[in-house]
Amino acid sequence: MRVFVAGGAGVLGRRLVPQLVARGHQVTATTTSAAKLGLLARLGADGVVMDGLDAVSVGEAVAKVRPDVIVHQMTGISLTHAGKPDLKHFDRWAVPTIRLRTEGTDHLLAAAEATDVSHFVAQGYANWNGVRQGGWVKTEEDPLDLHEGTAAHTSMAALRHVEDVVGKAGGAVMRYGAFYGPSATDDQVELVRKRQFPLVGGGTGYASWVHLDDAASATVLAVEQQARGVFNIVDDEPAPASEWLPYLAACAGAKRPVRVPKWLARLLAGEVAVTMMTEGRGFSNAKAKRELGWELRYPSWRQGFKEGLA
Image 1: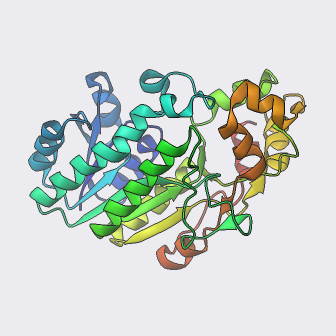
Image 2 (image 1 turned 90 degrees about the vertical axis):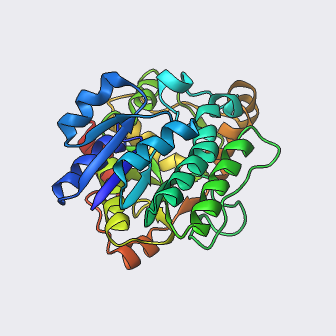
C-alpha cells in the first residue's frame, strides 16, 4: 500500500514510519525542513518537503505520490514551531497546531479528493479533555470538552473540526493520549526534576497516556483495515494526577512534587493548568481493542515510565 505520512519527521512519525515500512508498505513522509530528509531516508521513507499550510504545496506533494491512504500527523508543538509550552497562554502557544488541525486538515482532504485517495487517518487528542460531566473515564460516544471561555477553547474547537471533517470524509481519527517515549516527555521530566511541575489542589484530574510505539501500532492497524470513525488510543490505566505525577518523579529520580493550592496555580499557570490537574477526564481504549484488534506493548504508564527512565 502507498502510504503518505504528513508530518513523518515528528515525534510520532519517527516511530510510525518504520512500523509501516516493516509491514511492507511504500511510505512517503513529509517534513517542513530539507535538513530532515536524511532522517526520513534512514527510517525507510521517501522524504518530501511540504508546507502543510500551503494548499498548493500539499496538493502537489499528494498528486505526485498518488497514495492509497493519507495519514495526517502534522502538529506545531515542537520548540522550533511553538516555543516552550505555555499553558497560561495556551491559545497563543497552540496557534501553529491549531492552524495545522484546521487549515492543514482541509488542505490534505482537498488533495485526497482531487487524487482519489481512498482512505484518510488523522491525529486527534484524548488526554485530559473529555467532557466534564459524569464519570472520570470517557468513551468515543462522549464529546470532547470545548472549554469555552478559556485559553484552551481554540485548541479544542480545532480538534472538533478534525473529527467533523474527517468523519464526513469517511476517515478515522485517532484520539491519542499524552505521548511518552523517546523525546516525547523530555521537557516534562526536566520540570519534574527541578520541582517545577507541582500537584495542583488534590490532583484529582484524570489523564490518559500512550507510549509512542503503541500509538504507532494502532495507527498501522487503522491504515491497513481502512478503519472509520473515532478511536481513543490510550493505555489501560487512566489515572489522576495525584498518582501518575509522583510516580513519574520517582522514576526520574526526583523528589516528590510540591503541592500548590488552586488559587495560586491559577495565578501562576492559568485556568487551563488548574482544570487539567483537578477536573480532567481520562479515556477508555475498549473500542480500539475490540474493533482494531489492538494489543499494547505498554498497557500502563507505570511500566512505560519505569522502563523509559531507568
